[in-house]
Length: 141
Image (cartoon, rainbow, N blue to C red; front, side):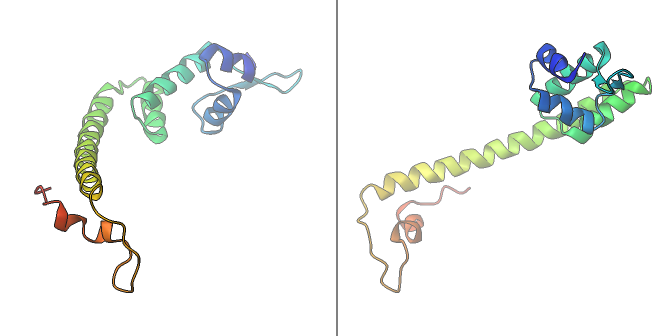
């Protein structure tokens, strides 16, 4: 298969195929007649795997490491579980932080609805921001 054919089979654009090839995740051969890169079913399998791994949040170096372990006939599954558990904990912490930010933003916006606009006077820049925590009590976040 050529780049475009592999891209169509995998449901990606040709630039994605070229990117993963440059990164060493795909291993095309060269057609001796025209020097085009030729991809096979293994490349398609690896490309589909890489896409699924990216959708699950794995980084390119992690995907490369998983593929290397598989290429060496070692199960990457224990590493995948460990990385995934760590990543899930990070995502949950980020979600908690974002929920706290959302709560602060919602509270501030509600408080700002009744506050008059101020003009910078040398003592203030934007009184909405400067005084939001005086109007909205902290929630212990």
